[in-house]
Image (cartoon, rainbow, N blue to C red):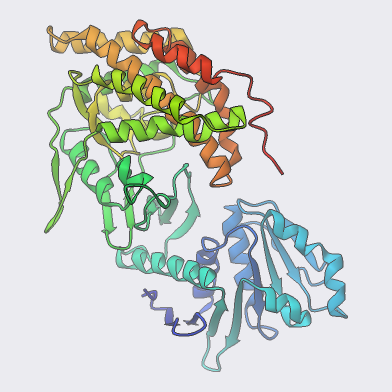
Length: 524
């Protein structure tokens, strides 16, 4: 999808070697291109930037680096005399100018290979080192035009050109939404493949969700990927549907301002930057309690199972069925336990594990159901102090929502995976929730809810232990390992419930709570 910015035109040819040609009509278009390219780069990419003196290489590089830094005023001098200039940005980037290189073998002294291990290398005048130009993942040549402006010609690996095409398509999407000149900046990410940006036009800032349609991994059972079995969103339709349902019932979810369902692009309202935590990252008890009370109101709504999204498009909210519940618990035995023990479980042990969970899930058959937001915890709950009532709680992550046991989301909040919630605060949140439910419905089944709460808390924490190890081993994201001691603590706390005795004994046998410092060490 070529960009529709009137200052930029493009021709994209992927019939042989992938290539993109852009016409940049003025310097502002070159600066926007540099901003856009910052979102196409991946760690380990070597970018070759060619063009004669005055072609605009430094202008493009400066815009790109400033975007990675999130600082439009960052000093980015040309490295003509220093030869290389590293920047500790969101994605570390090393800016190199090879104009003064006397011989190609001098490249070895610049440390570019080491820089590629940590981030990106942006090399001007790559012709001075032909081998470097050959190795480039992405090549960009700028050619000034006699009538003004310049041409940018892109080549390189298919993956790099596809990434460039995607970021240009996003600029086109912004233009169609009357935000084509908006400033793009990286925004908070998560453990999924979704990506977020902020887009600021004048005084208004909105959020871009970049979520192209794709399953989560290869087929693992019955020809289906994990995402299909666990009912994870594979496109943006569920987000649009659930957002609509939430706002219709008066809850504070982001308004969807513009959508391209096929491309997997959304522009949504920015609900703010305050969370349930204080400046030191600790839970603010009153905010957590307000979130629990919001859930109490939320779980009293008779939510629709079928939601209209667009003409001829409806969304059927999936059920949190046995297959989804089981596949999530198996993350513990597929990833976490083998990492801890250094060997997989036997087939007999896996069968016992499945049987214990199946008996627990039997007890959920009579549990109250509601929409389950699935990730209702501190990173995904916005505190809106200026709002009133339940609208003080902004809800931003719900594309994986299901119809299932209502107790799940309270367990997600009261045993927050990202921050320590004490047993005392957890008890306060559960008590506040139950009091609100009893007040609204005197016949509310508190005993059944507490049982479902314990089962779903154990299920969720078991799943998360597996996910955090999978993020390390499959996705190369070790940063989540630091949360594992907390999750184990929540799980120990939960397994004291009398209905979970059989599961507690099995977890002890499997070594779930054994010391994990060595087994979870990141291997070189």
